[in-house]
Image 1 (cartoon, rainbow, N blue to C red):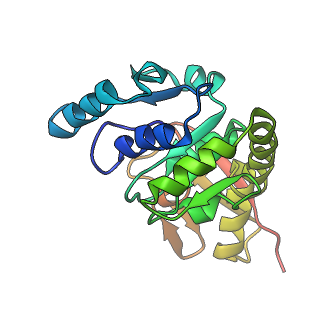
Image 2 (cartoon, helix red, strand yellow):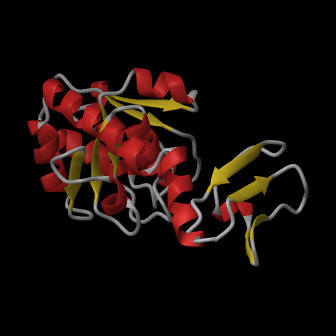
Length: 212
């Protein structure tokens, strides 16, 4: 599970799910940092848990290391704007096991295809599903997730969607992020770059838009 240690991320349910699964072959890595009452409650939960030897607080670790050592990405948040960690998991070809919280999981996870959606806060069902997932299942789900990412969320796919939305009759939509403030211009349409695509300042991209 990847995310800052806070009540909204709900890492305690991840520990409880591992307890319910009764798996002895699973390791739960909790990546992220945090302090305060919730972080202390999480540490107490781990210390008092029968699976305490299977749960590790890893702190902040680089992205590549996280996914190299992960079979299933768990998401137990109470809410999110858009769960970026699930997009990362799909991009890296990892299976996803997530609560169906507001908002985002249903946009990324196809239940039984590239992961599993569990009713929000149903930790018993989460634990039972965790008990059922085998290594071969995780590989199959992860491969499907990578395909879904390329189809729906990769750069080219997103640009095509925006091109369709803009519907410009011009032959090109040019986004130049070298100026501040930057705008994506398509005829009379202006879109702030943050709503278009997250990119580094100083890059330039050109989107071909078919003319009618």
